[in-house]
Amino acid sequence: MKYRLKEGPPQAAARAGFSAATGYRIEEDARLPSQKKAPRGRRRADPLVAIFDTEIVPLLQSAPGIRPIAVLDEMLRRHPDLPGNVRRTLERRIRDWRALHGE
Image 1 (tube, helix red, strand yellow):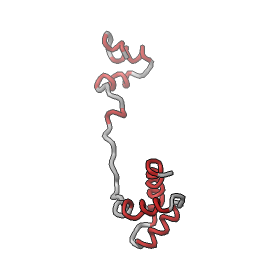
Image 2: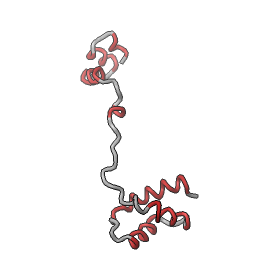
Image 3: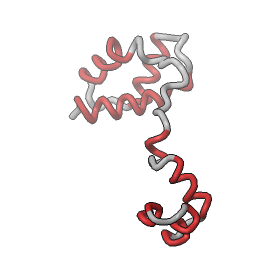
Image 4: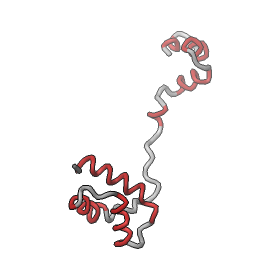
């Protein structure tokens, strides 16, 4: 929107091919939408933080081909208070760990 240096926001926006409202919005704050938002943190506490490094990583090191569902079954057996809905979180953590330290 280089025309905004010479013309007002409605004319510059029309020349650039978008609406006057967008021209005014860009005039007010030229940052991209991705630059305006702060990254969102975790919404809940990580249920695997206490056991991942101490129990899951040694299990993955001793049996490199073990499947995440088998790890989950073993962790549920060892820790009955662990919520059952951590399967997807555990799969992601194992996938990320294997990408860095695995086979």
